[in-house]
Length: 459
Image (cartoon, rainbow, N blue to C red; front, side):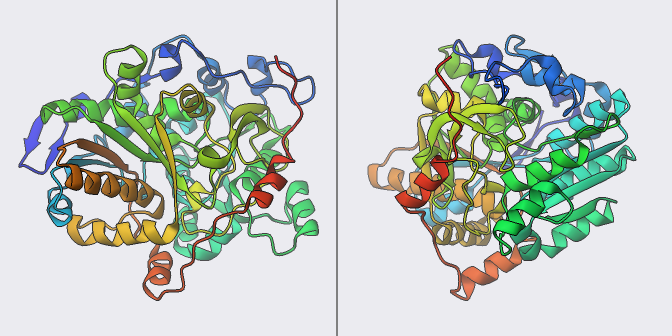
């Protein structure tokens, strides 16, 4: 391991994990099984084969193995941009006047600008190995679509991306990058699928959601034996792939002789938070330590903080299996905030179970003006312009550091800087010119979303 000055710890290629950490293997109480929406019975492994590559299906359903080997070909790809650095935010600490020690794991050092590439390359690898000829997916802010386009270009795999319409309008350069890597990008909802046409017939001005884009992407490949759908968050397999973040993090924190008091992550579907906390959640589940976990989400899309723990569809078009998760209802249409990657109605089944059982200690919803206030301050002091999604974690990490200023506690705070905001300048311009607004859904609006929840009897 190489320690580079007082600011950061950088691992070597040899320290890239050779196994993914499967958090389900450490959970005594497992997440509830996926249900077939017709029969309302647990989904069998084979029922997922028409949607995902078979090895990914096996990973999705694996609740026993604690570690799963990373293919050497995937590790070789990781070596091009990993390990990612752990940085101590000395300048931010000084600006806040806090005795807290603030660290962030920076995942933005690749063209996608985020952690999403960690799962994208694995999913394309398994699909290519199976003989799949084309892939489809959805993307919100565009980090996942960009990452998958990069992975598909590497493996010469055709890709169609349904990009949430409001994000496509707000972030045209994201679309351009995906197309640079050869992907076909369609704004969602679109006229290219039955689901999209039905939504537009009901609401011609619909700005879209991740749930809608998922429905369109699945419909595109459904029934095609040489095609598969891939997803960038929420799923068990995605949290599995992202566990490399947490495994690297623990090695780096040990180099500082530190153990976090607080682990903070943004939460939309759950991939970055699940990856960041993987090793430390393992410690908590096995009784070795009790770090405090905080999930941060938009107040405008409050799945954890105001949602219900219930079975729901993972998509707006209601074609996916049912997942037990914290949800606002698949019919909920979030407001057009700039953190497009967090505009999803539900949350990872794994994280939902951990939150429901008290292992994730707290969830907070924050307004986007407060998020961008924190992002601006972070950018000035830490020389990185953060993505809107990541800035949710920055907001709460700063809030906790300011609490330490009042109490005098020197807590160790770790958060995930999941990506840079270099393609989010419209959002920053909106904040700076005062046109950015906050929106918090009313109870009545949430009830309308809850009304779309399927009726599922107790198993």
